[in-house]
Image (cartoon, rainbow, N blue to C red; front, top):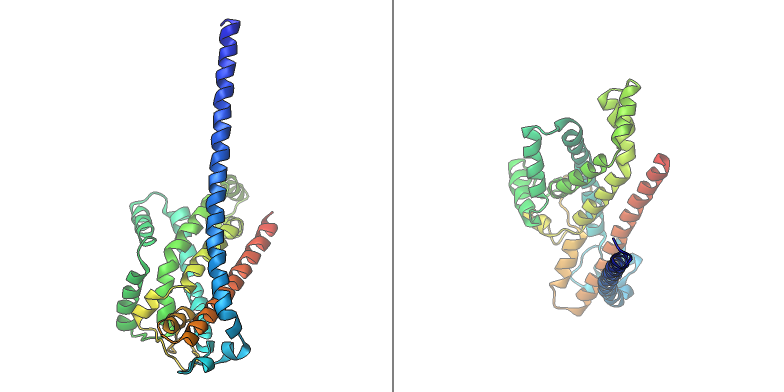
Length: 297
């Protein structure tokens, strides 16, 4: 190739690289713009709720029970109901979800049964939450005679978040290097010992990330619980898993449906409490995840 041809090729290469860098910068700017718009909208919503409901927050509001008078109404019954339901949901969904993921990823292989289960789990992850409510109504409330109890609500929400837990756990298990398993086998460990002592500890941060996302979705769900018959007016806090209950999202929905401005203020204060519970739960999960990451590292 002549010197002129080489110069032309170098120039064309430089122009191509410049275009790629420009496209990359443009894409980064576009992504940053979208992120700023989303954060601005979120901040505007939080500020609006804070302005409306911050003045209503008090210890009496948190520890109070429902009342027909807005100034006397509280959220203790709904707050304890949410805590009961979300803890029981975690106890039901996490062991089953992690166990199913371990079977599909470590034992199932490419068998027909594993493929069928995988297809169904992927499809269930996109099913609307109201469908899970109808399933919970037919299976737990009526067929299993759980009635409108905390157990029925938690079991319904466990079905709702189960696909998310399974899919996130499978991705975390896939991220574990194959060499770690082979090294464990070379030292004489069995398959189960390798999974329990090597694979699961390494994949635990990823599993906790999926659990955070799943439980964050569950704590804000209203439609499935209304469908199974969770009460909108409960003058007492649940005292066990078979007790009737309500949760914060349902109580907030009940207040927003009333025309009085004072109940709208109560709803805004309830939203702030729900956000605080959600952020606390996520903070604990993130702390646990970071702690396990340091141990693995």
